[in-house]
Image 1: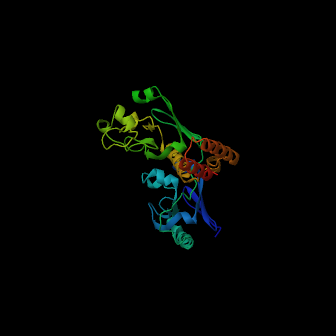
Image 2: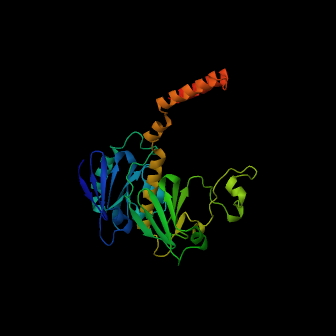
Image 3: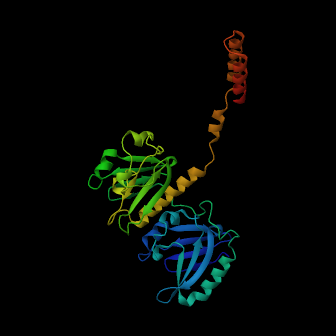
Amino acid sequence: MGDVLAGIHATWEFDTDSVLIRYERGIRTPRLLQSLRERRVPHTALSSVTLTPGKRGTVVLRAVPRPGADPLLEAADGQLKDGCDPYRLVLPAARETLAEYYADELRACLGADAGEPADRFLVAAPEAPMQFKAYDGRAGFDGERISFRWFWTGASSEKWKAGDQMFPVADLCGVEWRSPEGLEGYLRLLPKGCDAVAPASDLLTGPEARTGTATGVQPVIPRPARADQDPAAVIFGLGYGPVHESLPFAAAVLESVRRKQSAPPAASLTAAARRDPADIAERIHHLGELHRAGLVTDEEFSAKKAQLLAEL
């Protein structure tokens, strides 16, 4: 294709394998779209294309992403308002015929697996480093670690007792984002090994919480039910943690977590598991001396020798 379709708040540039979406910087453009600037969406990330009537003499062209293809939408979890949807292109109704043409062209580029959820993120997440100011602290992300620095004017006593927090991405299994435009918005990290959120009265305390010695209970790390008491969360409020700052942050963290989870084991770890042949030979020689001295039985010698040879 290679054509450009300009709409309200955004411009779509059609390429042979993707759509490059550039967002306008005007004062009427939602701040989330301004913060995203531009996004390249591969055709493989899309499930369908729709064209519907809009408000006040407009039509809306929308590329519908496959579930699991975009970390931004995965982090948003259906909480974005229509005006902040990065996949909508609003056009004057007079351009409906042109919009229908491009919709058909784009539909023809969709793959055979368009109707299936994506097994990995196909759209790039916002890039780190980034930070934003929450009500009870400042959140920062450098691409490898997330930091929470508490404000004495907003942080709860539980967070003050825990102190400022640092979370390596490798220690996380996910992230929760609740829009600041609703009640009790927050960004919450999900460390590996943490139990599901439960009421404080249901959480184990004392030695059982640390050792898992209670009947039928596995060793877990319980999470406080309320985000304002959880050192792995920052809470939002009026003017704190706005969508255009906290959602791209959550998406970047989520993408990094998924990437760490899917990364193959480092080659150095595999190499470390193999023993030095010279060391193995020396240990077998020493084992033979013990055997000849009668300090090791025939069965013990054979079993240990086989174990050492298996480490080569």
